[in-house]
Amino acid sequence: MIRITIELISAVHPSRSKILGIAEIANDGSSNSPFVGSYNVRLNKMAPKERELWKIGRVVAFPRKKKGVWDLLYVALRNIVGPRNP
Image (cartoon, rainbow, N blue to C red; front, side, top):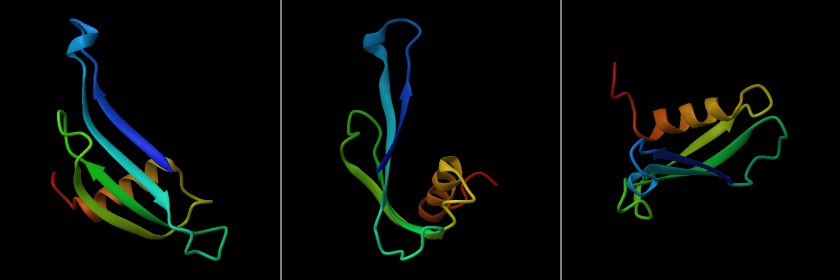
């Protein structure tokens, strides 16, 4: 599983830092190919509810040997959240 945590780090004091979001991307094991993978994705809410689920989705037939983790995150966000900032 890949976990991406987005955290606001306070310049004033560490106690003022907070988690803005958490994404978890897990291979679902459905692919029979080492070249592509399918993934379940969970996006959590912002603090103080960062452990609550916001949205779920999938990435199917991702070319994991050709593209990296940032591409996987991009495709996951595009699939789940959609275009928000044209």
